[in-house]
Amino acid sequence: MTAPDYGKTFALWREGASKAWGDYTRHAFVEGLGDGTLPRAAFLHYLVQDYVFLVHFSRAWSLGVVKSETLDEMKICAGTVDALVNHEMALHVKTCAAEGIDEATLFAAREEVENLAYTRYVMDAGLQGDFLDLMAALAPCVFGYGEIGLRLDGVATADGPYRDWINTYRHAEYQDVCQAVGAMLDSAVARRLGDSPENASRWAVLQDRFTTATELEVGFWSMGLRGA
Image (tube, rainbow, N blue to C red; front, side):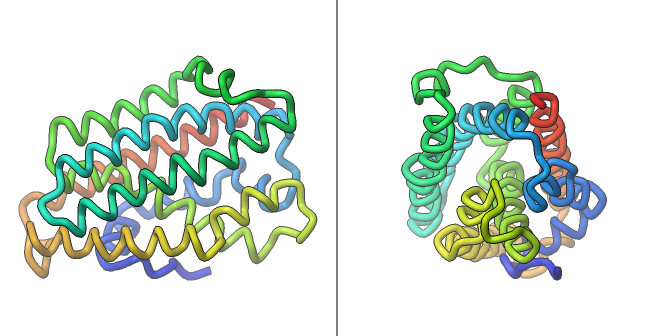
């Protein structure tokens, strides 16, 4: 599968983190989601941790509203918070409830070390840096899940055990989020760094933030596998 078109900035960052990106989007955990062989215990362990992750991820996107310079940037950040809090997290609640894990338990779950490392890295990028620093750290999760959802949609069976999860990320609603974030990101980068951002002095730092966040995604999948 070719990379989905989520904009110029994502394409450049993805290419700059090619090894880490492959490790992330084709991790053993991801492949197990696609072919249905992922142990249910590993999936539930991941879901609980991912719920906690999304709480912090939503807070980071809220920080994006504060760091924004344009109304469009504010709208996309606010809309992403809505998508995370009112839609993506609902899947976690629904799936875990069917397994006897209620929402209060999810919210109070103890964070694994990999979760702490990733969420605090993203928040630090936003608190220490500017809007682009924050976006570079947030981007791998948004775009990676969109790419994974599209790829797995083509390989998973219609009645596979993780079809609901795959549908969430391959669905037009989530793909629209990726498209909107990608377009906003391109505009934000051009506004601050010009039409050839890869030549700007700041580019290496932004690429490093994206690559590091991608590596932290790899660790998150591996953490999920420990729950098997």
